[in-house]
Structures are given as C-alpha cells and as structure tokens.
Image 1 (cartoon, rainbow, N blue to C red):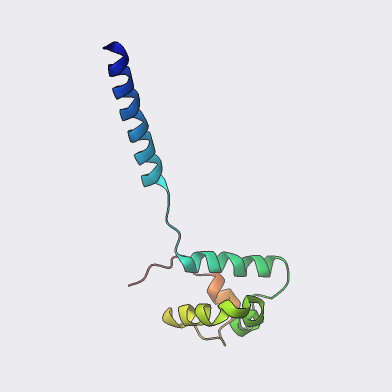
Image 2 (image 1 turned 120 degrees about the horizontal axis):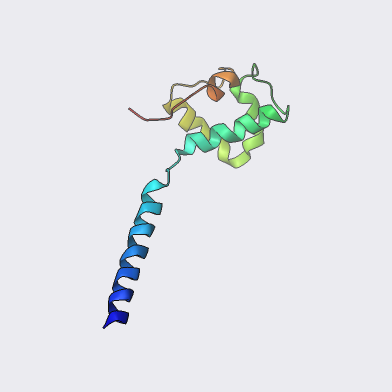
Length: 94
C-alpha cells in the first residue's frame, strides 16, 4: 500500500517535472537560427557587416531560395546590408 502511494507520488513528480521542462523550453524562430548562422559568418570574417545579403547566397547553396523567400517575407532585399539582418531583435510575425 505504501509502495503504491510512493509510486503514484513519484509518477506525479516526474510528470510535473517533465511538463515544467517542456514549458520552459523556448521555441526558436527559424529566422533566428538563420541569423545566428549569418552572425557566425561575420564573426569568422567570411562576410562583412556592410556586405549585401546577396553575398551569402552561394554559401547557403540549395537552401538559398528558401532563405531568400523568408527574407523577402520580412521585407529584406538581397541588396540590404548584412548588418540589417544581424540587427533584428525579434522575428515575431505580425
């Protein structure tokens, strides 16, 4: 009887702990991940902040058409400087 209660309480604690872990995780916007990749390119001096966004097109290869559409959805042009992309603080869609 005591053993059953312990298992129930233990199970409840695990469920609560798991739900707390799941709710505390942050879902990262795909553009934030892309932004981090671009920041890494700048940090490694592969591109400069004043370079146009189009300079990263070749580096993203087959994925570029997807990222170009995403950038356009956020009103970016391939002629915009990379510094504008890196400076975005929030990728919340309106």
